[in-house]
Structures are given as structure tokens and as C-alpha cells.
Image (cartoon, rainbow, N blue to C red):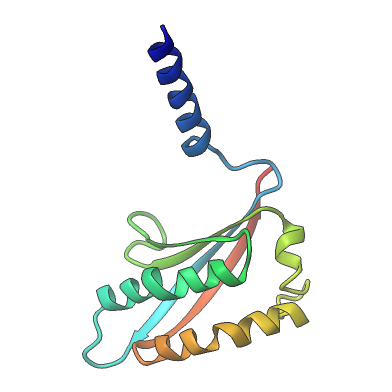
Length: 137
């Protein structure tokens, strides 16, 4: 009986930990990325850099933000790449960005901290993004 209770508790904890959904008020930023690679650089290398270096630095410097790189597999952006940001709320985003999309003072300081990683990314290629921010209703 004790084993059954322990197993049930573990299953419930796993469900709580991994079964979380997007809560009302969560902000989801979707960015379509246009990449121009340097000669000899593959898209795989570029994506590897994003996952191994850039995204961890973004998440470290924007507390509470989660970032993901994605590839379009259907629809308007098929075979395009994107970034998806999941942020607790608009208020959390607004600490770093003004209403017009420009960086706030705090956002500018974060960009300065990210600059060495962005400079390293520039050795692989350049990228621009077009974004839409969505809020969960």
C-alpha cells in the first residue's frame, strides 16, 4: 500500500511539473527569422549556436522568459525559422520594451550584456526578425 501511495504521488508530481499549460495572461512572442549565413556556415551550425549559446544567455538575462527556436513545417512560413518566447505577462515584457517596441533602459542594459554572444553569432551570419506578441485569453 505504501508503494502504491508513493507511485501515485510521483505520477501526480510529474503531471504537475510537465503538464503545465499556458495560463491566462501569458505572453507568447512569435518571431519569424530571416537568416543570411556567412560562406561555409550551415543552418545546422547556426541553429546549434542558438540552442547552445544564445538562448541560454537570453533566458539568463531575461528572468522568467523561455525561448525556443522552431522551424515552420506547414502554412505560410513553411521551411522558415522562428523564435518563440513565453513570458509570464505583458508586464514582464514591458520592463524591457516600450509600447513602441523600442528597448527600455533595462532592455538596453540587457542588450549590452548579450552583445558578446550577438557578436559571436554575427561570425556565423546575420538575422532579422518580424514578430507578433500574443496574450493568452
